[in-house]
Image 1 (tube, rainbow, N blue to C red):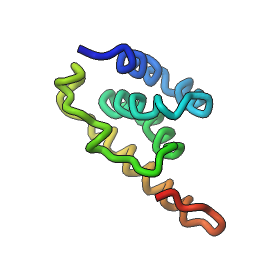
Image 2: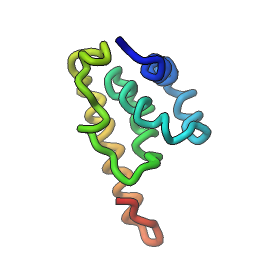
Image 3: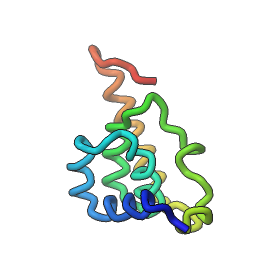
Length: 105
């Protein structure tokens, strides 16, 4: 059974353009739930925006993605989700390597 937080995260990430715009005003505590929902349901635009604005020093897949059966989510993540996260991490890494940029991790 999904928690209220998980259900809300799924609904927020369903509207990708609006979710991306709203990230700046959302509390950082919601980022993990939004990441989980976006990852499991293939919301690639939201995933990229979440990774690029990730407010924590580390982004751990092991901690973020519990077993799907526990949450009633699809069995496997979509290939597009994995690709979106990898591309966003590469883009973030390139930005962090620019002169005058602080390294977070």
